[in-house]
Each structure stands twice: as structure tokens, then as C-alpha cells.
Length: 446
Ligand code: GLN
Image 1 (cartoon, protein in one colour):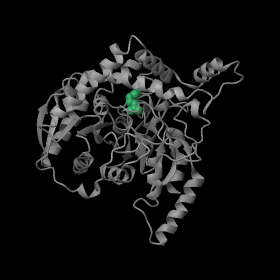
Image 2 (cartoon, protein in one colour):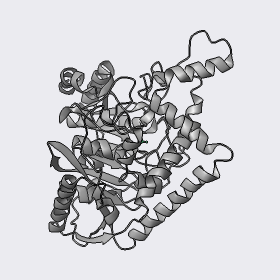
Image 3 (cartoon, helix red, strand yellow):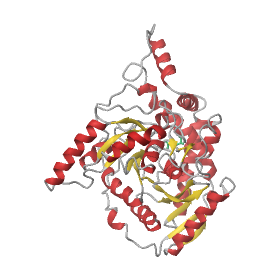
Image 4 (cartoon, rainbow, N blue to C red):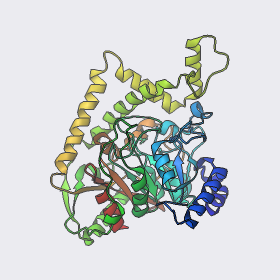
């Protein structure tokens, strides 16, 4: 009730929620009370959470912040949602995002922009901006997010919270509306690494309904949070500290590195030579996959349908034209172009080759370091509207997050101080399935 009340008073200023499920939440809370009384509490019994509005939730609108799905009531729960329900968590609702998770500022939502709780004239980041703002403003202690190219880490950085993007295949994608399937990965967003560990523990695990889910036991993330950083080597990639990086942000990250050294870690400069290539590779591969994934929204099966179509062609055309926003259309066009005959080798294949080389660069780095440390973003949160007219400028800001997704690696963003009263995120990147190490390092730092 406390959190629902807080949502009621604070959310109108932030626009972090698309749907608040008050009735269902109060019923679930009652059930949680009964479980507690009966001594049958689960690991998250009674803990209020929220879901990014691209996780299907049975009987509850799942809009993806698009007019296309404004009328869509999911007929089933995503595996992540079901897992958290089973653990006893109580969902308070669905959070705002960039339309179909395409964006870095949560400004492309059909329901309007999310505002940053630290400065309401600033963006909350994206695409999981609603989850980040909700956690930062204490509307909910933890929330789910998804990260295809930075969408958990970047809004976590902009809003001063902790967000973990797990190894590709660690968390089931079943029931998560697909953007770029080869990179989409769900993860926790919370106030601390410890809370992220609590959430991930329940979210992670093999799921036969997701063909890319990996059959590997989930370690006990909490029990490893006390490990010392003595003997841990952190790699500092010189390309992540180059001209793109705001000098004040750099200062905060260097201070964080000093603190980690005090905690026992040693540091070493490394090189990830193809860092800049991650942007063109990602912005070919992700629209290509999106153009294919979004072909299902045809005005026939579900979602928006235009009025009085004259024939099938008109139905497809008008339903899609009327219901998709500009950024989604831009990406469908780019993706369709890159996949078309005659261009496939020049764009899509080339991007896939670069993707492989980027993954190899990371593997080479992990021969000599345990974790990589870097900024999450080149700059802190910018003002709403300031980058809307230049999408390329927005894409360039994803420089430090995209490589991780192309390589399927886990990474965490941790608050590392303020620049001009706006939060800065430090990013730790690990090798596949090193979530425990990442959470431990972040926890020691916090
Ligand atoms: N900003 C990136 C994009 O626009 C990443 C989005 C995401 O991770 N979903 O595609």
C-alpha cells in the first residue's frame, strides 16, 4: 500500500508506469501475508516489483509502449514473470519504455517520455527508462528490464541505480516481446548489487520454451557477495577512455577504479581495438532482426487494426503505418534494406563478421584480466528533446554498451557519483556466466 500510494503521488511527474495493477497487487499482497503467517514464505514473498511493459503478463495489458499493442492483453505470463511470481514477488504494474525497446531515452513511447527523478527536465535513459526511474524514485524496490544494446545498463546509469545485463541465454526470453532476438536479454534493476542478486536468482535458469536458453545450473549469487577483491585483475580498455568520453565522467570512473584498487583489485590497461565498430555492426544487425520480428504485427493476428480496410494490402499498410512510431519505422526500413537481395553481403554479412571479431577481442582480453571496467555511457543524462532530431547522435552514445550484447557477455552498471547533479554509471564487464563475479565486485564497491 505504501508503494502504491507513492506511485499515485510521484508517478504523474515521472511517467514511469504505463499500467498500475492496484487490484491484483493488493490481492497478491494478501496472499503473501497468508503465506508468511503459514511459515511458507518464498525468497521474495511480499516484495513489490514492476515489469518493463514488454514482458507478457497474463490478463494485463502488454503494450511495448506502442499504439500497435495498446489493446493487447497477454494471454500468458513470460517465464521471467512466472518465476518471480512463484518466488512470491508482488507486481505493482508495467513500466514505460521506448517503443518496442528501440531507443536510448524512453522518449519514443506512445505514452509519452519518462522523466529522470534526479532532474525532471532530463531523460531517464532507455529503453528500460520506466523501470530505472521507478526504482530511483523509490516507487518500487526492484524491477525487470531488458538489454539488447544497453537498455538495462544505460538507464540504470542515468538514474543512479544498479542494473545487470546477464549472459545471453542465462535468462529465458520466452514471453518477452522480441526486438533483436540474438541479443535481447532480461535482467534485474534495483538499488544495489545485492538486490540485483536476489532478483537474478529467481529470474535465471534453463527454459525449454526458449531455444537459446542455456542448460547450466544457476549458482548461489548471494553467497558469493562477501568475496574479497584481492587477486582480481580489472582491465581498463583504452578505447573506452578516449575522446568520446566526457572528462567529468572520466574523473568519476577513475575515482571508482582507485576505490576498487583500495579494495584489493589490481588494474591493467587493455585494448579492445574494434570498440567503435560496435555501433555500425549493432545498428545493422538489430534493425535486421527487428524488421523480421515485427513482421508479425500485420493488423490481422493481434494488435492494432486500421478502420475499414479496402483490401488485404491496405489493411497491412495502414495498420502498420498508423500504429508504429517513427523510430520503429526507421528501423524496419533499415533492416529490410540491409537484408534485401544484393545488399545482404555488403551490410548484414559484414556486420556479422565484425560481430565475431568484437567477440574475439573480448576473449583475448579475458586471457589476462578477470573483469573489464569502463564507463556505462560517455555522458550523464541529457535534457529531454535535445537529441530527438538526430537519431545518429543518440546511436553514437551507445558506444560503451553495444559490444557486450554483440558478444553475449554479462555486464553491470553501478552508480559512481554525480556530474552536475546527474548520476554517472560505472560498468563492469565479465566473461560468459561470470554474473556472480560481477555482482560481488559491484557489491564490494557499494
Ligand atoms: N539504445 C539501443 C537501441 O536503440 C539499445 C536498446 C535496447 O537495449 N533495447 O537499440
